[in-house]
Image (cartoon, rainbow, N blue to C red; front, side, top):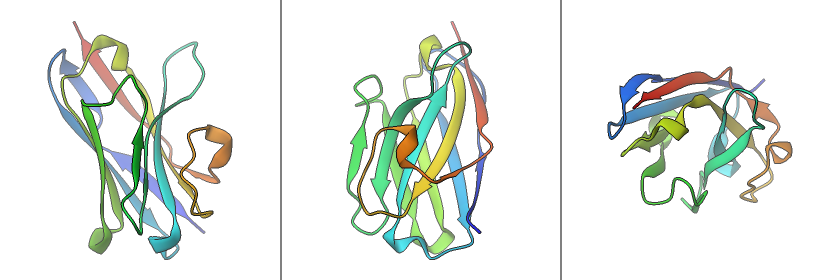
Length: 124
């Protein structure tokens, strides 16, 4: 059974940085694609970034490109989301997701496994 556990959320001022972590367990993840999504109150869950664990192929939403970086630590089975130059509109619950079909996807329906989420709040 795949388990994803996020951590690293919190309250930060605009312009600040946070690093989210997603610890994955239960499978061999070398064939997986890992994604980060976020959901603000009253809004749909939206794609943030994704990475193919084996090849390091990454993709980002336009709203975070140049500010956020997704990466993996294979030895620790952990995916990171480094968030810099944070803005109040980045405030949301951030979710880690995993998919085992090799294809980097940008929609929530493309992912089979989800973490519980971690709250990120950016104050102005």
